[in-house]
Image (cartoon, rainbow, N blue to C red; front, side, top):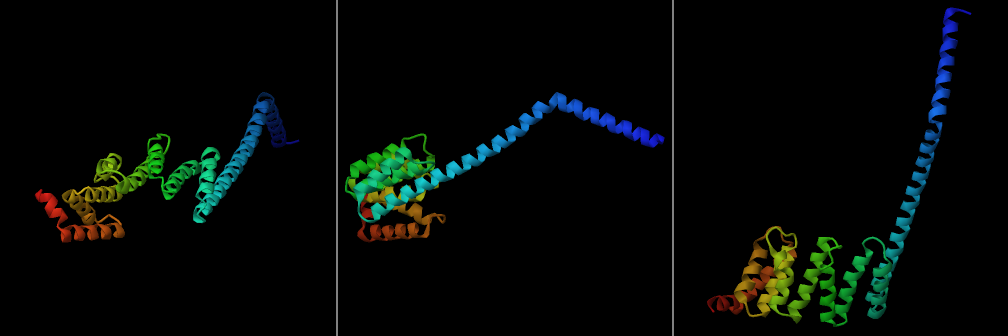
Length: 226
């Protein structure tokens, strides 16, 4: 045997001994790590399957409730939405609460609908954007059924220049002011919408229509003079 062959065999034996030593020392840890990876992968796959199944079931329940609404079966819709609020997954319980409040309004129970929207807007566990939307929904109902102060208490804070919902908030406030005989205030609010280039086209168009109406009837001038 040449020296090279001898040293090669010695080197391979040393490597083999090192592997055995490493395995003896760390084998159980390596096996545990492999098992943990396999189990973790399995758990993650199961979680994905479970969440997808839950979301799918909740989505089907929500669509069924909407079909009841479409068919004019409001009581059945409210029952389905109430169940979804209790058992739904992800965002569906909140969507169920919002839609249920709308159905209550469709049934003519405006006070009940406002109370339902107010309850959503006061729930700090719900994302702020949805809470603000609930305030707007309540405010628009109150334009016809409440006072200017009722509307303002819900959306005046949303009418600031930096709020993304300012256009709708100003529209609700403008309508409430017009109904209350506060023409100057209504004109100012609708003018803010009209001048805001970021406002949706249909919202600006409605604001312009209201401004024309206020000017033609002299409501803004009379209120300002008074």
